[in-house]
Length: 375
Image (cartoon, rainbow, N blue to C red; front, side):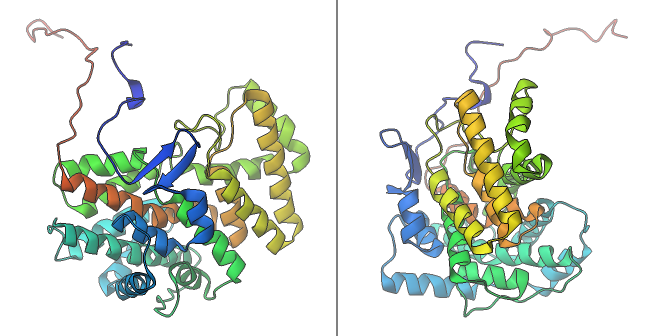
């Protein structure tokens, strides 16, 4: 290992961005200068999407125009629906989503239009269509037919309706909406950086997003919310939680949902999402919901006491999604529904002042040698 190499690009500043930042003085994630916890409670996700793309929160007129635009872009083609029915039911939904996003890119006659207006139009288009891809896949894995998008419903309401055939109580929709805002953007995370690298080659926005989806699938990134729920299922009961955590730490087991490369004093998104998780427990008011809440509290307390490591956003988000009725493989695609806003904002930012991202490497292989005499 070389002292000159920043492994994992830790601490390396690769470019400028005006999209988001964790403010060191408050340890708070901000979008365009607004604290994410304030946005999550005070705004709808559509407002936050507008902010991320336009740098300012919308006026009433701008909100109405933006919602109308998003709703007008809903709806998959017959060919996209046919492709979804051809795909393997046992495939991970992230594989399905990645494939269909790539497909709608080749359907789009404006794919190669990389003007600011063209990139924005495709960004809204993907925001509008990705929820339907996820919902159709969710239902087909259960042997159910698709439910078309409903232009009379807001973004989050429409997703619930396409998945379950009904819109839940407003309090449930708000908990989900909060998660959308909290997941929307996070500076140069792995999937965003992947998208920017692809965009820096002047490839199209669908290619960049497809690559970002592939990066987000990994359990060290977006897939962590799924891993958290699997962990809770493995723990089983609150009475097992403390011993399970101490044993996992003793055996140096990878524990998902804790720690973050950016935060050192705790993820600023966690309190807001934990409140939403607790709200879901109160709404459900079942022994199962209370069980997951109690397990989570014990696991959190044990980790903090033993290691001083705090949970990240995935820790409360996973069980919250589960209580909303989503199966575990759908958790990371839901992340994509939100992060498409951050990814595309970064892709547009990259395109506006592009430089090919091409770092160097530290070679540790053999010195130059001759083929002659080799076995």
